[in-house]
Image (tube, rainbow, N blue to C red; front, side, top):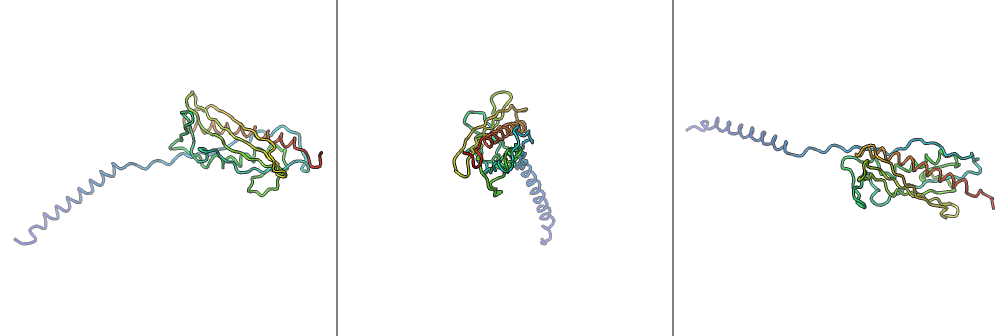
Length: 222
């Protein structure tokens, strides 16, 4: 028998094997898990708000205030959007997150809110190199969407400490706590409620700082 007798059947078997390989590969690809969709990313913002009702001050008597970077308590120092179903247990949404940590997004909002009071000669972040009379330290104690009641609600707690830069002594400190109902029991509803809670706390913080500036003894006063 000549060698070419087996050529045609062999080619047919090779073509059949290749076709089966393509079918199997396509079938296995269909069984592989699809890539997870990218998470929804949210920004923590605050409205301009209303300046505190305080009498005008002159540049000579108004103090300057520097705002240190906002810190965060353990569990709230990430970009996760935190929610709570069981007391003391923090969870986070799998497909939604903040664009940055809430603490880092808060610092410029705090500067703007206090600046609008008009009670300071200047207000700036610590990175601005501002020579200041007063220093403000803040810490996010909690920013969480709480489930259990209907509707869910967002709770935001911020601790503020005001210090005198000349004496390095703490003038006063206060904790601000605000709870806002969520329009919907999902991450987006929580983000909207968080924005409202932040706005309310920043308004209280700005008034607190303005009052501290007003009660601060002026240079040369007994």
